[in-house]
Image 1 (cartoon, one colour):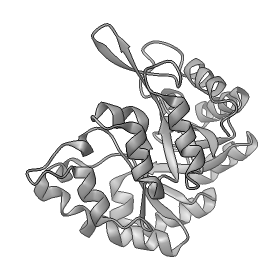
Image 2 (cartoon, helix red, strand yellow):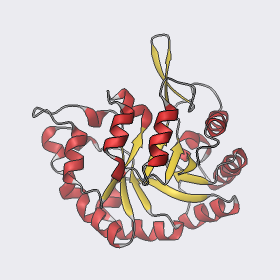
Image 3 (cartoon, helix red, strand yellow):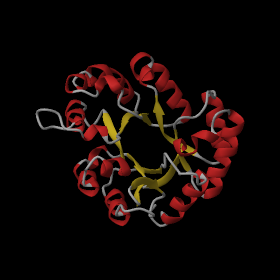
Image 4 (cartoon, helix red, strand yellow):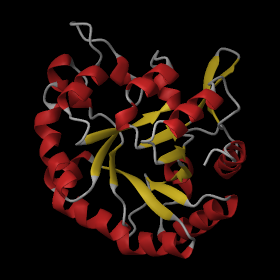
Length: 252
């Protein structure tokens, strides 16, 4: 298992190529060697790859707009071939799928792209939040339905530790049960500050990361564990990424 950084954490510093270059330099200086690309500015893929290469960073996962899967899967494949990246992520469940009726259309819409990615030696990766753990009238969760419709060989899950817990899941039990899909995961801690729930650097919240990391390290599936912190509450996101990286030393 290799430890990386999710660029969403530093999205405010990736709005153009010059910013992106400085940010990737800082990420590499912290000690990361693997990155996920998410929420960066309109930068040509060739330049994105060049900047990452210059800083010794391997692109291992992305998040992409829904329309890229539904209307331009061939272009999505070409971009990831350029990146030399096998994991092609969908970062959020579009709103029209949030109902029991809507979720049944997900496979009809996304299976064609997932099959094309698979044929190209890539895999679609679905990133969860908490909403996927809402229960439908038949007792299943939205996530249950997603996993039933999308075979494991066509869709993995970029499991997010914070959102699993926020959604009421036993994080460790869920990771064990769904190990075959966990090629990539997001590491994010869950902290309590008074009556407020906060995202936190890994090891600074209430999640049992020694057990979580042991599960991921031992499942034989997880290749990349990517640190993500959507909200740093006024702290430098680079400082938060650094503290997470220091906590994770020894887990690669």
